[in-house]
Every structure is written in structure tokens, then in C-alpha cells.
Image (cartoon, rainbow, N blue to C red):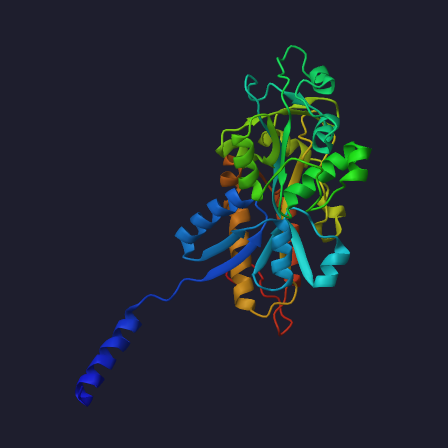
Length: 350
């Protein structure tokens, strides 16, 4: 090939590359499956508006904490808030993004959605293995008039480290001393039996195809899979149905101003309408950012989600954060700094 032809092709290639649009920004996050349905919806809407893409790995809260501490993602997501000492240890900052509920789902022929009533003691007994049949006296006492089969209970739990595990086991540990002693509360615990599913998706799938199953999933997964949910006895002794109204009632008493590092748990809250297994899901980011432009892009997305994503959240029965809390959160972002010590975000478009 002669020099003139090489020069011509080089010029054409350069012109072609110049005509290509600049690659859209992409941010990476990983963690909790609890908020995945709403994060996916926000991501789609935000990309359509701005061109910025979010690659979010729904791997469980434990995985999200590991990835953000290892700096392999731009932000982590966890349903188990880290205590202030742990935040300081890893140089992290956290804040609540949205609230929702963990619900009990069952696969029990002849029992309609919302017909079965349970309380924390009965649920603890099932997952401890001390209540093994659906017609156990403890369950029958809560359900007079319901035809409960003499069928073995198949408990379905999370097999991965997850904030859904933490919220669920924290609730049961606060209700039942034996559960607290033998299983305890954490993102990953050892259940004495039952089936393990990875993610809310895995638990929903296993419970959906296992006769006699009971599992626990974030409410959006129960809705999407049209699963049979139970009522649950709350702190004030009322049997309540899981929905956004019940989650909002539980969240109404939350005083985030008294929560260092936004560390606050919403299980077993007072109020006749409160759903007892309610929780917030949290974002984790490093206080000192090696890539301030990327951190700014993450915070722009989260600011947009707070401002524009409330209706989308409610459609999936999540509870948006109150405006007063959002202001506290956005004020806290000024503590996130780049290599020069300056805040990476001072407001939209900053």
C-alpha cells in the first residue's frame, strides 16, 4: 500500500472516530437485592434522561460491603447499616436511600393471600425447627376457622450474606429469646434446616415451587411473583397486611436526627398500622475519593433519584425518604472529598 493511500485511510479513520459520540458515563454499584427493583427502575429512567448508565450488581448486602471496602465499585448498598465505629474504620459514609418492608410468603394450597395470620413467636419457631407442621397448635391458635393442612413446613432462607437476612433476624431476635440465643442477628446466620436461596430472587423462586414453603422477601419481589403473603402481628398487637401504608406507619416514628452515621433500625415499631419488619436500605461511599468526577456523577444520580424517583418508588411499594431527611443526607455529602480535600459535590451541576 503506497504512502498516499495510507495517509488517505488514516485521515478517513480519524474523521470517523471524531464523528462518534463520546461514550456515556457509567457508574458501578453493588450490594443489596432488597432495593434492586427500584434501583433498576431509577437507572432506566436516569439513563434515558442523561445518558449516564448504572451497572448495579444485585449480590446481597454482604457482597456490597466487601466490594466498597475493596474499592472495586463506586458505591455499595446494604440493608444492614454499618455502626459509626465501622464507618470510621473503613473510611466510609452511609445514608438511607429508600425504605421498604420484608414480608413472609407462603406456598400453601387452600390458603388465600392475606388469610394466614402469624406472629413473631410462631415464625421464630418455624425457622428454629420447633414448629414443624402447618397445623401446629401455635399456628392454629392464631388462625381459628382456617383449614390448615397437616403438612411439613419447608422454611426458605437467604443463603448469601444479605441485609434482608439482617432485618429479618434482627426482628425475630427482638421477639424471641431462643431465636436470639441459637441463631442471632446478622447478614449471614446458620439456620438449623430448610432451603437456601441466593438473593430475594432465589428465595422467591424456591418458595414459589416448594409445597408447604414459607420464606421472607422484599415486598416488591412478592408483588412481582404474585406470591401468597401472610398477615403479621405487630408491636401493638394488631394483625397488619404488608403494603406501603404499613411501611410508612413504621417509618413515621423514625428520628434520623438522633442516629449517628444514619444508623437506625425500623423493626417492631409502635403503632397499630405499622408493619413490624420494615427497614431502610443504605448507600455506602468512601469519604476520600480517588476519582472525584465519578463520585460527583454518583451523587448527581442519587440526588436525581431523591428528587424525581418518589412516585416510581411508591409504585413498587417502597417508602421515599422524607424531604427533611434528604436535606440532612445531601448536607452530609459535603464531607465526601477528592484528593485535594475539596468536596466532590456542592449541589446539582456543581
